[in-house]
Image (cartoon, rainbow, N blue to C red; front, side, top):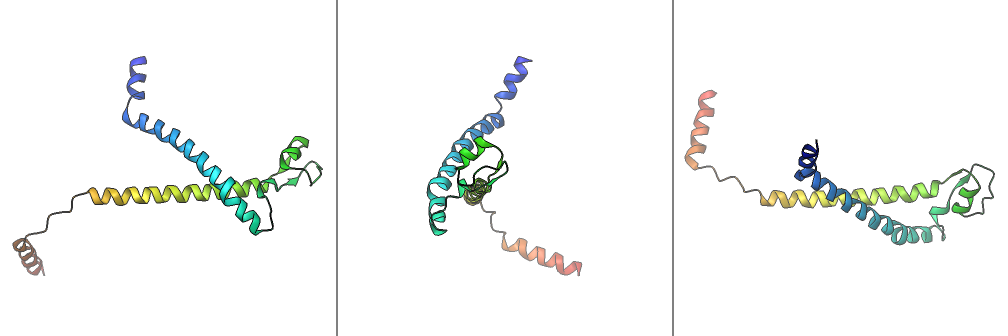
Length: 134
């Protein structure tokens, strides 16, 4: 059983997947920082200096003036501002991954050799064949 597990764990796909997960987690932190530290402050400023991450509806009769962390300590809250921040984070991450895949596919398409041009006599024979079929 250990030998089978070793063969499974050392397959290229499993190792590639592990590397992808690790890089994805690190990339997720970068995007999270991008959203929290760069994207959301200007959006908050645009809406009058609002910090979306502290928007919530108190569900346990908390004072609405508390910060989100303090309100969570006092009971349940509906943290819709945090959800908005996470949603923007997801949209940015999805867009960046889409662009990466798009560039990768373009690079792969350039690497594929173009099919050799069809000889003129082959084209003529195909035209004759198609004419005979009609």
